[in-house]
Length: 252
Length: 86
Image (cartoon, rainbow over the protein chains, first blue to last red):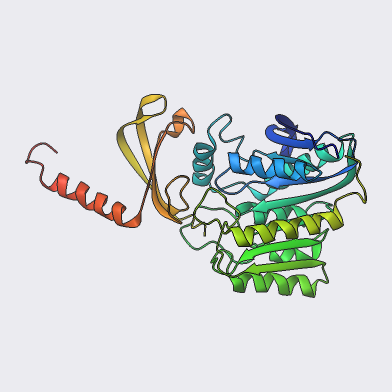
């Protein structure tokens, strides 16, 4: 099996046609391949998120991670960019949808694309993955511990986001949710509320709640990392995207 | 969790970042996930000059205990300054 991949920084048209930085990783085989937009966590467009993006390419997906903080902090280091975005209240929802929509269009236009595209996001990106899936025509979406799909940020938080669970009827694709039982944003109660909304709307979804894991359990370079939950979570992701994004037998 | 809680304060002074010294105009204080410190959450302080861009930033990530000790040390130091200097 030919397993070469290529990864590089590119520019793509995001919200409002703005050219934004993004990281593209793709298998070099003929495909056709499914596509994944990787939505980075609150700490930004960092090395670990780029590694996640490459991992999707290794597993046979074209993947792109847009730098959601590019406008606030072009060329800045990821931590400085995240601090700036954080101070400004995070990424506006409308802009996020435009940026992810631009990334999806870029991926679907690739010559080796099978036309199917999904999203995966972590932390704030988990909420944004859900937001993209209720706003854009997608084939699959994964929400990894996204806060404030249900619930409102407490008073005093600069984050300018609100709950979006009421948009559940607009969900355009199957949803996979991966959560930690020890997380408080989202809390298990909030996850249950989202689950109820999905049930009521008759949506296709599967949720997994990991005991002994809290927020950010996929973050390999942080103390929040929980290998058992992360390893199982990755398996759930491969099963899920395998069902909804992959071609039956992609040539590689 | 990401707490997002942030206190902002105007500051006057200077800080030394990766590109050398620069004038400070504000500081952000928040309790959240650290980028580097080996803890789930830390008290983070960003000394900033937004007018000079995102890289005009001096960042520290402190355990809650050490942040309190630092705050007390600052207060004690200022309290012991001889009259007339402040």
